[in-house]
Each structure stands twice: as structure tokens, then as C-alpha cells.
Amino acid sequence: MKNLMNLMIAFAFCTTTSVAADPVIDLIPGSSVNYFQGSFDSGKNKAGTEGKLFFVEFYADWCTPCKWMDKTTFRDSDVINLLNDNYVPLKMDIESDEGSNLKEKFSVRMLPTILIFNSKGDMVERVEKTLSSESMTSLLSFHNNPKNKQVISHNVNSSPSVYSENRGPNLDHLYNQYQIAEKFRTNYKLQVGNHFDYNDAFDQVRELKEIFLEPIIVLNNYVDNTTQYKVLMGEFQTIDEAESFRKILRTDFKIDSIVY
Image (cartoon, rainbow, N blue to C red; front, top):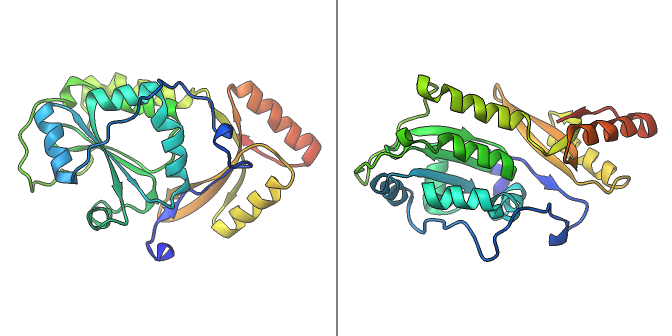
């Protein structure tokens, strides 16, 4: 059963269910991510022999944030081009036999979880949250450098090493650019709640949906073996728009919030 999987899922809630309600994104008609149709080891070997990075997204059919990323993040033209040109992308269903084994191997406790390996098979990034197209583009661009894309021959059964914080002095400026892009993104939300019990978070979502038309989501934040559930509201292009709505919530509805 899903509730026995020890996974902390970032459930997403929207006020409408139609596809037309999704954010407007930069699409190339007919384009899509060319996901590798094979095993984890085969994908890793392919990345090595082609001098590319290996991108793995752990997902499940019942994961709402995963579906949101499929309809938005992974349909963005910049994300598609970066993945298809520089990565071997693989989607791994945690409920498949291989996915279940890899879930245990890499201690996947949240969905979506994204792992990025260089062409040598070393894990260079681990992301355990929902990413917008802008954040994903920054992440993929940051790791898309020659040191991560050397042509390598892998043994089929070799295992990748664990993630290391030592990126090397030549990558410091790229990492700073990634952090800046993440900080100054052009999509903002308001955090209107922070809970330690997901039932409390979902209760707040139901109450808010009775009043507001804005999209509302719940994101998990896993820190020190404790999961916190953040309730986020709205989709704002600028921080000024988010700040204006924050004042409305405080003045008209007595709801305190912070820009997220």
C-alpha cells in the first residue's frame, strides 16, 4: 500500500482540473523529452559512452506533483533541449521491480526525486522537490559542463558513487549562478501555512479553496528526519505582485503569509 512506502509526497491541489488552467509555458509544437526506454544501468552506460549526463526522475502514477511537472516543466522548450542534447533522461517508476529496488538503494523517500550523474557515473545532484521550468533549466545548465561529459566506458554492473559536495574551484561560479537563478526566479507564491501533520495541511487547503480561486499546493520540506508541510498559494510573475496579494490576505482576510 502506498501509505506504507515511507515516502513523503508533495501533494498538489488546484482549484480547477482542466488542462487549460495550467501555467502558460514556452512550447515547441510536437516536441518532447526523449526518455530512455531501458534499465538504469543501460541508461548510465549510454550516458558514459556518449559523453552525456544521466538524469533520473523517480515517480509514481499516483504522484500529483510528478504529473504537474510532466504537464509544465518537462514541456518547456529550454528543458526539452537541455535534456535531449546533453543528458540521457530516464523516468523510473518506484512501483516497478527495478524502481522499487533503486528506491531502496538510493533511499528515495519523497516524490518527485531527481538524481543527476556525470558521465563517469558519479552522482552530482539530488533534488527532492517539485521544480518549475525555470528552476529545472538552471539546474540542468549548471551541470552541463565539459567535466561532467567525458566519454567513459562503464561496466554494466558498476554502481555510481555517492554525491560529493566537492565541486572543484572551476565550478564555483557556475554554482553561484544556479543559486542566484533559484533565488531570483520569476514565479512566486505565498506561504500561508506550515504544518508537521499532513492532515492539518490538507484541512487548511480545503478551507482556503472554499474562499479563493488561486491555485493552492502543499510542498514537503524534509529536515532532520522531520517532514514539514508548507501550504503555498498563488502564481505571481513578480515579487511585487506577490507582495500586493500578501497585503490583501492580511488586511481583508486576516491571513498572515510570506513570499515564497
